[in-house]
Length: 141
Image (tube, rainbow, N blue to C red; front, side, top):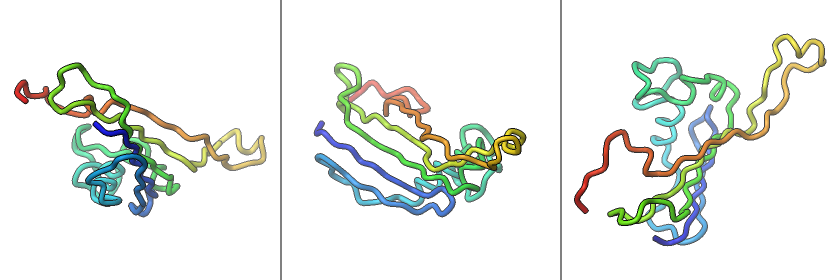
């Protein structure tokens, strides 16, 4: 599998953004607004706190301030060579999702510090692409 890194940046409050590629990226056509909206609001939803099950929950169902503060959401797909030997599809990408420019509100401590909020450092989580399936992989190639 060729070496690549695809970085997609979006604004959670507007569901718009851009994607860029470094390396050998085939099939990258740009920012996918529908996929981004599914990630932020949940599958088939356009608002927060309306998920009918954890399977359909989006980022803002868990933490509504992602949308309220228009946090920058970044998704990076990178070829790292991970995967198991003999995997039919070859190596899988590593996916990192991060939040940036999200102010932290000090509700009680803010009065003592003289500040209502401060910007938090970037928060991120990373997972191997083969961990994203909700069902067991097939055995035939």
